[in-house]
Image (tube, rainbow, N blue to C red; front, side, top):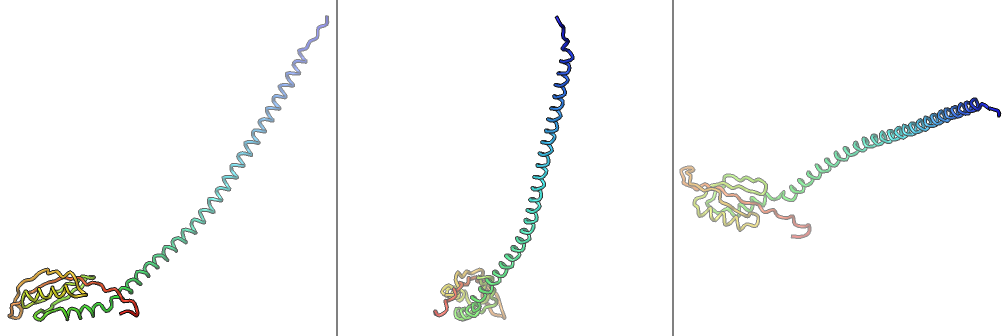
Length: 188
């Protein structure tokens, strides 16, 4: 029988398989490195694109913030002008109020009453003066209550004083001016 030594042949096949393994391992490594590099490049590109988008948004937000601040300034100016307009309208509507007030006081103050001070704070009117008697103060308060311009007359204080060698009653009254609504043009 002939004996054939297959060891070198097996050795060559092992060597060839090992070589194929290393080649495949190298190819897989290169392929993995290529895939990693492509993925890394793709992710970096997406990050760069997103960064550009973020910068664009920051620039637009900054310009919109400037516009909003300008709008706020304009709105503040508008509110200030509207407030001035309301004040002017209120003054225009009540410009004859003082004349009517003095006219009404001249009608309502009875004889024997001497007014010292009139102080107006908003719609509230403080009247201080002297009267010959308490009855005249009562008459004044009744007249103020019946007045169409004045309401809620309240006696704050009354006391006896000597003024120019005469005994008089000093008084202090508060009342409220009822605001007259402006009549529409063409109506009386």
